[in-house]
Image (cartoon, rainbow, N blue to C red):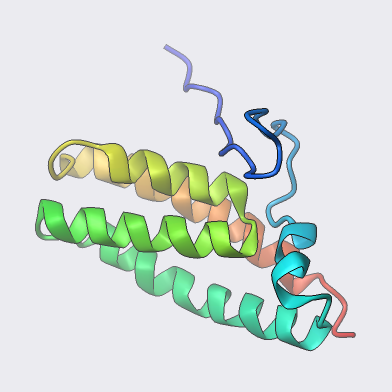
Length: 131
């Protein structure tokens, strides 16, 4: 069976419409609403987000309990939503909704998808002009 197409989180301002599969890794317009267009603040927030990604993804990969898995997934979902990283937020939300601690194979597949979405977000952020 072919892998399922990724679905994307519904943007809070889209009134129930899902983002297209071509959605950008980070919705800068979403972030700008919270930073009031302060470019320096946006870059600082994005830098903090990028710095936390490996920590949170590692916490998921190594989660020893259901509670640890759920907390790491919830943390990643929230931080991704805060910056407008909708594709990453959707995968984290899917991880959070899993019942129990996923088996190692299933956990690995989810973490691989998260790492792919995180890589896209990191690359997108790294390509942003500094000013």
